[in-house]
Amino acid sequence: MKFNTKGLILTSKTLKGDQRLVTVMTGTHGVIRCFIKNRKLLSVSRSNAIQPLAYSRLSVYSGRDAYIIDEADCIFSFFETSTELEALAVAQYLCELCMYTVPDGVASQEIMSLLMNSLYVLSKHSKPELMVKSVFEMRLMALSGMTPDILACKDCGAYEDETMYFLIDKGELQCSSCYHGAPGACSLNRGALYVLRHSILAEPKRIFSFSTSDETLAQFADCAERYALSKIERTFNSLEYYKKLINRPEFIKKEQ
Image 1 (cartoon, rainbow, N blue to C red):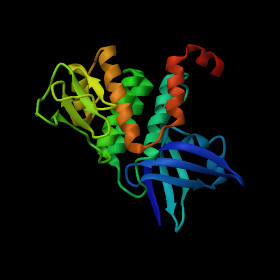
Image 2 (image 1 turned 30 degrees about the vertical axis):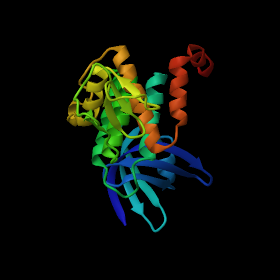
Image 3 (image 1 turned 90 degrees about the vertical axis):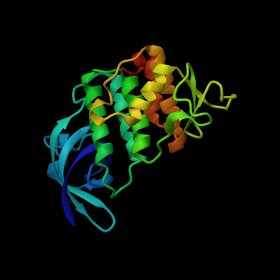
Image 4 (image 1 turned 60 degrees about the horizontal axis):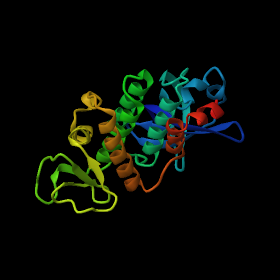
């Protein structure tokens, strides 16, 4: 069976025998892994359509055991000439998150839109990379059926407090009166609590329409990353690379 779709190339790996294996995020078929055997498509002049972070029109054969891309035309490419290592690392991390959360063969238009919107913001450098990363993590968890209970304290029903605590393992909130030192909880000031709720409940077009202090963003980011990784139950090389970039300036010099 043959179908046409638009997709974002998440990863690309060269195989023996003039073949390539690409992982593609699509709104129509979720994340699919496709072989490419068309030599014209693999040529230097055509290969931009099958490079990572390229958004392309794809002609795909769905066989018994594999998908095969026969034709591809690049619509546009994120970060085609970018040298911003932090933004690229975050972009790769978002792609990896999708690879491990979005199933094959399931329409995933909302997640596709979230990924495209996030990559656009990253490529324009209009918001901090940490903000984009953290909002994406929480929204992806919600769209993947792992929405935490962030409306009120799970015990007394308090909507907010000077400090609220997010229980990572349970995905629940507790106010300062009800919290008694649950292990691994994240503390959230009022701003961080607002951002947490916004990341899950906001309209898609307004998901990045906020600004916040560094302290508030740091609290929210800690919460979002820990919650996402706890649900996926793994970490990622791209995430570790991003952390090295932001925490060790000398690491950047070594990598350049």
